[in-house]
Length: 268
Image (cartoon, rainbow, N blue to C red; front, side):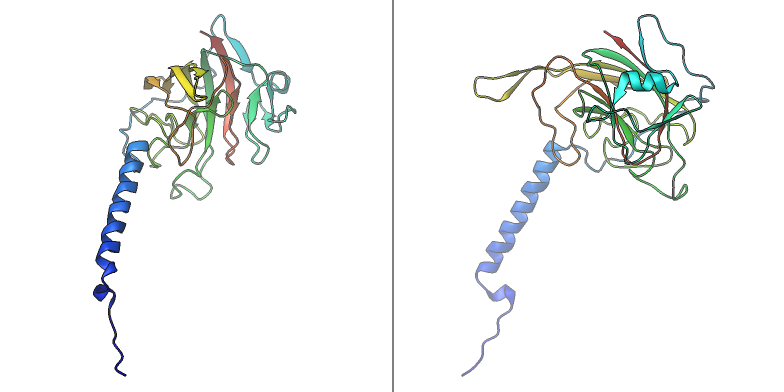
């Protein structure tokens, strides 16, 4: 009996299978582009923020101080996810993330606010040649874990779309990169307008107002009343989760010893 050998190309189903694979791959890429526009964008113009401030900025009238450099103020205003005292370290008026100690949350809840945060990212563990999300990673969240302004050492450190300092994480890249070098003090002045959500008759979340975030990074406007698109996620498109009119503010433990000082909030 003669043995017949056929290549893949000779099988009748192969062209159809190959064509279907190409179509499916194209559809997946198109869906990703629609859900996460600019996924691979890394180029953000650099702006010079000027010298770092030697002293903390003055607290304005009507503001509530959330951290003033003392352990007493830290314990009074912040807690872990399980309502315990924060495990982060306070020394010489500076609060430092304790990797593995967990993120910290305000004991009180807030709606529309103006938030001032001063922070400094650590020097890269692998030297200046080390790049990516492992450099000085933390974040400022509103409503516990829903809406994040990213903290990252973005000084000469490109990363993926809306993943750098001043980003509304994975939703909006900053207009410019206003980062200072690691070790230098930086500021965020954030205006947060809380989303207004309701449960629709079909059980789905209805967005009555998406809310917005404005961010000044080292005094430079990098986000200007950008509407929110849902809860912060790393790999999926943002989606809305129902919540009330107020929520906790979170400072994130992402494994980096980011330092903080002079944190205050003022209701709007």
